[in-house]
Length: 238
Length: 74
Image (tube, chains in turn green, blue):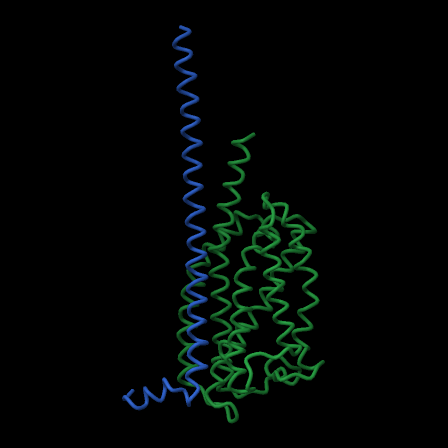
């Protein structure tokens, strides 16, 4: 496992997997859109608005998962000063922020017809909004210094402090009274939603995950090029 | 798909105004992220190639000036 921590070897594997991510993403997205828009049942209470779920839930899942990846990479860049971990964390942050925004926006479009309001300051919505600000803070701290290396440590600390928010997001629907519905997929007694709805949901989750991996490879290539540019500049000035 | 079923598909049981913007936003976000990532990557690669070629030219210039100095000495 350790040999993949070598950035050159890691990128070799990542570049080899890149076409698989792309093809898989296109395949799963097409299937996912077909099921979510055409071939899945209406909800008995929510009618067609349930189709917003096939974007909303995968986006929320990605937002939380990418935060977990970012925070673990931030931890290993803090503890072991691993350069690859730092690059993965900084490449993931904008993707995670975008998915968090998509989760909030799609939730608002679902809330308006079903709850009668675009937004409420309840625990689930507020904790996800805080995660969005944590992503923004992480990106801002990384770019706050002229020497990009100086931002790594404070940004990593912020990302780690924000981890406390993840269980709050997950359990907010159980701990507080909220308009948001409780967990219906990841629960001890198994999913409680209809199988016809689970299929598009899982497919879209897969598509979004592959999309993240695809973007991660492209952004890592950019970060590696940027790192080499910095090295050449430093050597040139010295 | 005939015309009526297509219109009813677009109508989404009366919730078209809420469902289609979500899918539209998803598309815009995904395409935007993809384009932005590719642009940054291309820009960095281009800058790297430029810097590398400048470095090579410097080396060559240094070599040729060293050689011409030697010739003058001779």
